[in-house]
Image (cartoon, rainbow, N blue to C red; front, side, top):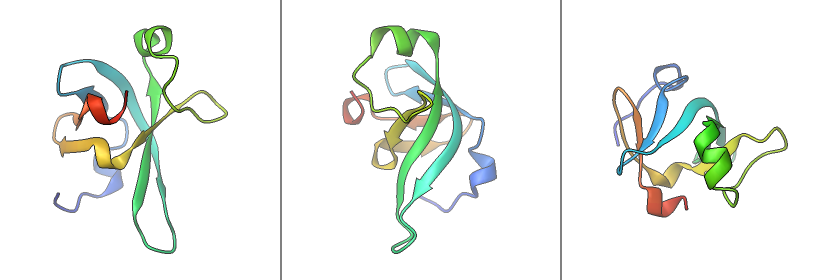
Length: 85
């Protein structure tokens, strides 16, 4: 994947390849030793909160989606749903 500044993905909608909307990108987590992107932190939609209770969340209830699930960034942040659910 090409290098993309965080400000270009912040507040974008996260959508699965199947078209399911997960929410908006709020932040990211990074391993400061290696520089590896670990998670994208997402404000979940009400649908996701109601139907996918097993997704990993932080203390504020925000989704922690593995960055490895991201397949593309454009108008949306596209994720592979199978890598998340």
